[in-house]
Image (tube, rainbow, N blue to C red; front, side):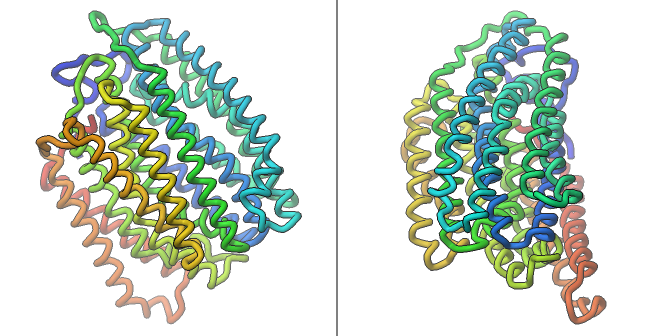
Length: 527
């Protein structure tokens, strides 16, 4: 795939802020970031496999996933959403500062760490109340274990908050692979602990997670010190005001909405009964991990490029938004079709071992098939929000407040309506539908502003549509072929047949995708 360097060489009406020793294309930046996320996906799948094997669908697994969901929802949400605040702020510092770039980065990291201490104490003191409120159906021992797990996971928030600032500085400087890769160390620590630990398995895994985040913070601090030592501002460019109050308020609103969504999901899953939280967690892991990682990589690179362009006085057109949405959907759609088509095989191969029985495989596979819809609608909403956040002429706080309020309210109503009849599937469907309602509302509010409406010009990236269709055809063809020759592996499915089906389908789809890109000479730039 050919990659244009336009994101790093600045648009016609803006210059690129700062000089870094490394210049990479916008597409390569996304690939590097996704590479780190891909390692995280493999580790997350390994963790899911180990938990299914060693804990199954049990009160202990519910306790682990409850504590992890509540605490890591804060960590992961802050990592993604607070970048909305720090990337524009750091980009403004990077344009006009040399050594001042380092001082600003360290100052903001210190402030973030202090905020993390307060948040950690708040969650720690409220862990018992949160467990009783969100998961009243947990058994007594499981409730105690969930509270202890939550407190351990929450203890790492100061380090994770500082890492958000370090990652923003490294991203603005064009470094995406290392920050993405190093932040997978906590998942590796959980996997290693689950593989070798004996007694107190849940608490040992949570402790390993906490220690690993401290190591990540130390490594990222060293990388920031090395990077800023050679940083030079771009001469002759005046940084535009970063509007920290407006962007910071919008970021806080996004954090609150994302946490409210996760906690609502957890509370409704707990009401389903024993195993509800575990089923939802495993469904979301398998159904959204790859799609969300890809969407996060794309949106992060685009947001960084747009923030730098806005800081240098450039404009973002409607064509820029929809071109990047087109690229993202063309990459996401084959992935989600693959997961939906192979949901029983994926669950059986990855989770169907040890204490994870056949009924558990069927239940999770059913939810997984519906879960594949959510990343598609969520990605489009994410890109529209990114477009709003970088536009300094829009009432950002009002638009974000309306959007997240409606999204959270619609999810609550859908969960309330669908969960009694559909169980976990009702939660999954609510996650897919609510972004569409929010998108329709934002489109109405932005009508006439030229943000979402305008001429859309596709260049050589238009061939991605053909490549996506070729990939989907390859995935389906390989699946049908394996079904026709299923007798080779005997009447009952096995790990060997599952792996062969997944591998052949994925490789054929991937191969046809890249062959199509090569033949059509597709060129992609994310900016």
